[in-house]
Image (cartoon, rainbow, N blue to C red; front, side, top):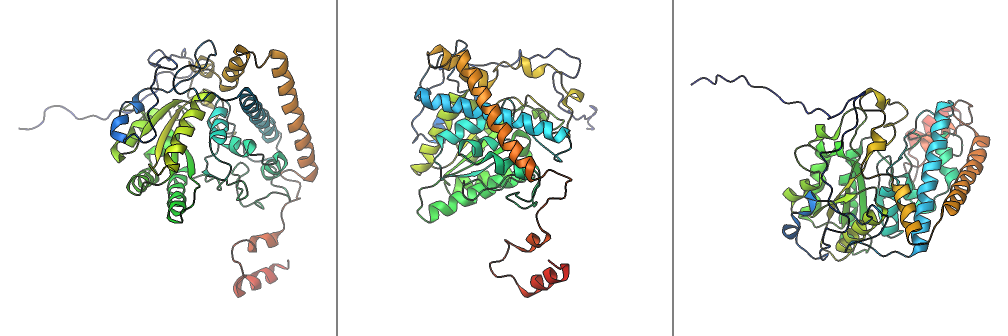
Length: 410
């Protein structure tokens, strides 16, 4: 018999649009400290509930509670807070520079600082990171010079990557920070491949990678998950669910159907879902996954549940697709403010110390920016030499490149 019911497609729509009142009432957040912490040897079959809850450590009063509390020393927490402040101040300064025409492009990580800084603290300095474009905190936490980051943003003659990348796509072999790719999906399979090579060589270093929620809908994500599972690669695969891509919400990538962490289940991998605005929770989950990888129990996927408080980039206007005050209504708050309140609650910080730390970060960024601008900014012509196009590819330059370089006269 003929089907008499017309078929239709459903196109997911965000709950709120510009002009609407932000509404996160549908979010069901478990109490801080309520999620058990399993042994790192637990099989993925024993962890099926973890993709559907949320690992939290800091409660509403700023107390660290529950089995995931990593019990970090106050000095470590203070350094983490200062690094998050430094990232935020750096972002603000570079954003203004773009608006002043001193660089072509910039992307801020406002509201997501704990994702990178806490992970950097939980990883070893020589673990290899395959980041997306909001993990500049990994470099800052590892001590990469701000001046080098700014020289790249300004595309001047001291740009460490010699003008071969977009301003915010940093790269540093020395700091174990793999080149950022604008095509984010490539980072996952490359991280898995690097981790497989590390294990094949009998090394003791692991890999970690970060992509956004939208990238989970790309083929690269699935290829990486298959290889990570089959070969038990020592890698941490982070999905930063900040609710929004440049103009579409996470539901377009399937976030309304199931959590992103639950995608790990089909590959036989553990999936953890973590409060990405909780420094202690991010640290604890990363520490757990790293210990699991180092003990040869394989890969872990972590969904970092957070919110992109600012525009996707300087070429984006979020007021066109979401309520202007939605970030303020985000129920998991601000990662900087939450860690600050925790330190105050345990008597290891104060408003005065916070203002002093903020002023110190501002001065550090101001001094580095003054030095970088003195070298040159976009449009001033003080850029890497044309001859650098022919360098850093071959150990011994082949004849045809030598001839092309000669033809350019450099």
